[in-house]
Image (tube, rainbow, N blue to C red; front, side, top):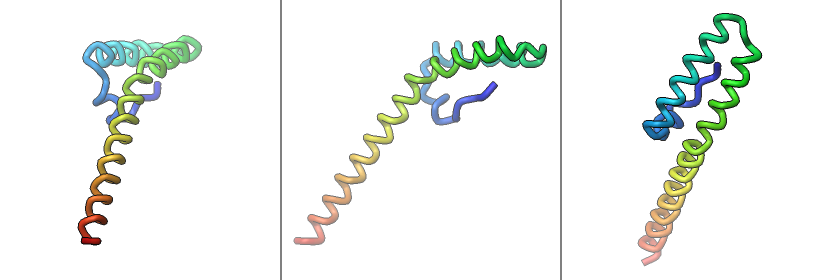
Length: 81
């Protein structure tokens, strides 16, 4: 089973995180029993589950980029004066 990044896990809601942990536990068990076909299905569920957190991470990145651009613009304006 592939884990998602720490940044994405940090943006999961409590319900999403509980479900994520349960799915990872089930997937790990299936892999230990060499049931990779079923583990694949569980991994797909995990991939779908983390999509909203990935979007939240992208939104934070966009907001940070906008704040950086605004700061750089304000510095540029201050230097011109």
